Amino acid sequence: MINLKAVAPAPARRSPPVLYDVRDSIAKITLNRPRFRNAQNSAMTYGLDSAFQRAAHDEAVAVIVLGGAGDHFSAGHDIGSPGRDLDVSYPRRTLWPDHVGRPGVESRLRREAEVYLELVRRWREVPKPTIAMVQGACIAGGLMLAWACDLIVAADDAFFMDPVLRMGSPGVEFFAHPLQMRPRFAKEFLFLAERVDAVRARELGMVNRVVPRAKLEAETFAIARRIAAMPALALTLAKRAVNFAEDEMGLRASVDNAFALHQLAHAASAEVSAGDAILGATPQSMRRAAAESGTGDPVE
Ligand code: ZN
Image 1 (spheres, helix red, strand yellow):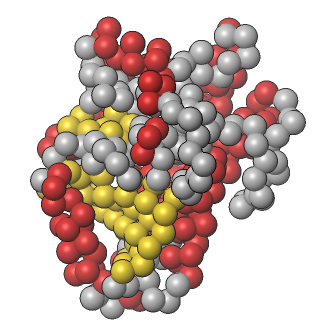
Image 2 (cartoon, helix red, strand yellow):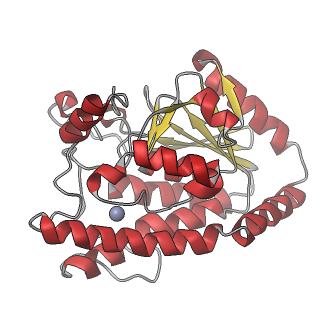
């Protein structure tokens, strides 16, 4: 869900897709493809995993803040930027073997089980507090990153949506919707693919705080500093206790179930769409469909 009008010649020196910085015991991880509204290609996903590992292992880091460069947190998984790297092999981080060169279902399952399921779970379970700092678009795969964090601080211009039903899928791979926003609204969120603004997201329990856009970073870091002053072990234990409770409420099992349905949906789409597992969806087609249904331009 990126705007191809924004495509420009590749810069002579590419900036990394993820930035990492530590200030006063707070690690700041930044999604850094602002030209493409931080659409997530695999280079970004693996960069993100490296950054989380670095922050987790650095004794000087007490709290991790995850943000996005530019006007948007993340417009989702990359379905059309020039840096789309679906068929590139990267060194594996989990026990799922490489997907490249494998046929259809097997290739998708291997790739998505690693980058969209197991890595997201790993980030959710980093034994340090994490805060998502969200401005602008937080769409589909963007939701997965925000949901993996412990707290979400949203700017007043932030909005949330999962329009992947239009691609034939029940929802994004890390299907936490029913626990993030209660089941009945989760259905509305998925069925209508509408934007949910920051205030509504807070009312639904998905967002902790809504702050003015200009103060997003200052307010997020103020919260991070307060958390960083708490006893580190107790924070780890509190996080594990809540995550365990969330899994007991059904998060882990329902994500596993929906992930299998998601793979079934990709296979069904590929079967009727000349092998295209997302029904030929492009950033342009997603924009058009959203405009026609009046749900708001997903990449405006
Ligand atoms: Zn998928």
